[in-house]
Amino acid sequence: MSMLNKLTKITEKKAKRLGRGPGSGKGEHTVGRGNKGMRARKSGQAQAWFEGGQLPMVKRMPMLRGKARFNVLTPSAMVTLHDLNKMSAEVITLDALKLEKVIDARFAKAKIVANGEVTRKVSVQGVPVSKSAKTAIEKAGGKVE
Image 1 (cartoon, rainbow, N blue to C red):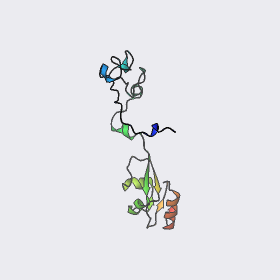
Image 2: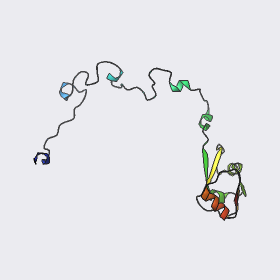
Image 3: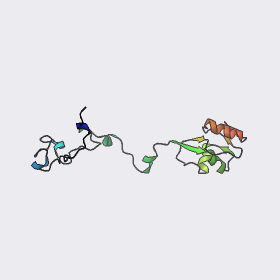
């Protein structure tokens, strides 16, 4: 076998510096960008939202004014068993969670998950509960409807 591939390098090539004149190692005038057009220019990339000249998405959508445009999506809130201990209400509903400010008033849905422990008897109505949270609530003497 040849020993040539095991020799260490003693020289390194300099990188080609595009657009820096005839001595740069790559082209002179157009430097591999073609002749004319948008992509031949210095800042020649179209914006990410550019759609080739058709009416852009921003202009096709209706205008939503004011702060309410951020409240369009109302995902489900996550309530832990630790949060249920802090509440004073015996019956846990979505309105009770909002009233005691456990969740924000904008939430349309909530789900109780098992994180922590329940130390008192509570009754959950109309709020989805995870399996492990249900067993923990029933173990503490509460019920889930």
